[in-house]
Length: 421
Image (cartoon, rainbow, N blue to C red):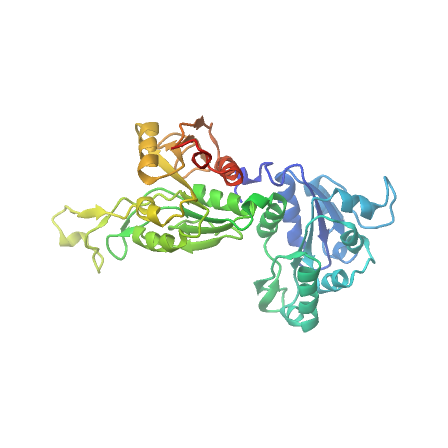
């Protein structure tokens, strides 16, 4: 996560997360998760089992959360501790969830503070299993995990495959990384019924149009804006597909990411996904032109007379060519990056491509556009609405965009209510 992503923000801000830590070597990684959740504005109450305290000191968690660590159920300050934690929790996250914890949770045991509060809470519960791959493969461990998931309604995240503790080799059993824990916590806290079952398709990043096996035509897009929108929609509970050109960013957690290179590949990936989409966001910066005849071998300087002439043709306009594939009820959003005539050209683009809303952002302005973590956009809608946003982190721009879409999903588009277009 970038620095801007770790400022207090919904859905983590002002929520209480009980973080249960059990006795596995992965406990050391959970300190980072506790730190990140705290920086995002959550109140993190850490519950350490006695075994966990052998792997990581309570002071480590106190230092990153600014709160005391809970270890014993034998406290009655303000009422029984397990009941207070269970009542106050907006979410209970157990990481690592060892084989022993899975067994005790599945059996409904109440032999320490953590298992006791699991029985008392009505908050969503996330378990992040972590153990040796042979233990994770044991039928009884799998049965316990299934019972926790299917019968108790707990959400299991992981385990991943990869390197295990020293001397244990590799395999499935590794705890997911801290950033994944943080994102899943946000998804459980941010879930909205409005988005349940909704399909969202988003394009992001640049495209690359080959000149030869080494060179290509592209642009400066990093994909940050589209990735932020994909993340925000997923945090709210949508099923999200992100079709992205080359980007150095990691795939957003929980999102189906489809990686492509060229504009034609992006079109072929997007078109079949249109019919089932409730929301479509065209945030990619597609290269407008491609070579008419890409060379099969590297073009060498010595082969010319000092000049290099390049014949180009237009690439497919993905928004225009997929407009007929979109459901009539789908919400369509576009982006317009311009150097001059920003709002006029954005409004024209919105009309031509059938968007309900377009985000117009200026090219070349400090803090906006490509290769930065912030953006400054003006939101224009087809009913004449205009909202100029200040320079904001792209995560916040995404949140405000999805706020607008959420209202339309819940209440219907204005035109559907008789406002006309």
